[in-house]
Amino acid sequence: MGDPLAWDRDGRDWPNRAASRFVEAGGIHWHVQQLGQGPVLLLLHGTGAATHSWRDLAPRLAQHFTVVAPDLPGHGFTRSPDDSSLSLPGMAAAVRALLDVLAIRPDLVAGHSAGAAVLIRMALDGMIAPRGIVSINGALIPFRGVAGHTFAPIARVLAANTLTARLFAWWAEGHGPIRGILNSTGSTITADGEALYARLARNPGHVHAALTMMASWDLAPLTAELPRLDVPLLLIAGGRDGTVPPDESFQARDLVPGARVVCLRTLGHLAHEEKPAEIAGLIDEFWGEVGPDDR
Image (cartoon, rainbow, N blue to C red; front, top):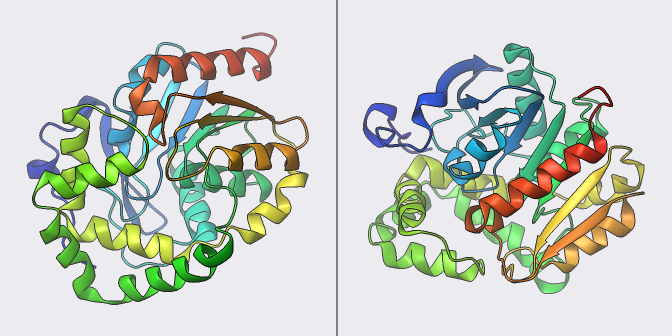
C-alpha cells in the first residue's frame, strides 16, 4: 500500500496542527482535528484530500461550533491496515467507529465531494442523526454513459497494480502535474494549498488509498435511496465545478424531499477552499434554520 506520511516530518507545518490528535478506532489509526466550542459539526473531506482541505474554513466554523475533522482511512495521516474501509459502506462504518470512540454525536455534518456521500450513507443507515447535512459539491450521482462503464474498471486496474501509486508519486514530484489536476477542478486556490496537495500526491500510501477508494465506489445504491433521506439537506454547488457538474446537485435536490441548492456560479470543485468565509456563512445560516430552538 506504500509508505504512510510521517507526522514528525510531513506534518510539521500542517494547517491547524495544534488541533490535531491521533485516535485508535475500528482497527484504524486516525488523525483527527478538533477545534472550537458549541454544537458538534463533523467535516468529511473528499477523495484524495485530507484535513488540510478545511484549513481556512474550520477556524471560521469554530467560532460557533465544535468542529471535528478526520483524515479519512488511508488519506493524509490516517493509517488503515488494509483496503476494507475504502468502499462507501466501509468508509461509513469506519467513521461511525471513530465517532463511537470519540463519544461524539454530530449535531450538524458537512462533506465535500465523496465526503458528502459518506455522511448521507451514514444518515440513511442510522449511524448518525444530525439536524442537517451540508453537501459541498457532493458526489451523489453515478457516472453516466461511457464514463460510467469505464471509470471504475480503469481505477480498479490502477489500484491493483502496486507500482501505480509509486509511479504517480514520482510523477507528482514537480508541482506542474498537480497544478494541472487542480485547474481541472475549476477552482483557483493559493500556492500554499497547492503545495499541500502536492505533498499528498507525492506519497504512495495516500495515492493508493485515493485510487482504491475510486475503484471501490458505487453510488447507485445511495442514489436510489436518496428519496428516503429525512434529514434537511443543503446542497452547495460550484457553477464552475469541473469534477462534479453542478447539475448533479440539482438532480439530488429533486430526489430528496425538502432539499435545496445554493449555486455559487464563479466557484469550482474546491469552493470551500476558494471562498471559506462565504461557505462558512452558508453553513451558519443553515444551522440557524435547522438547529434547536434553545440554541
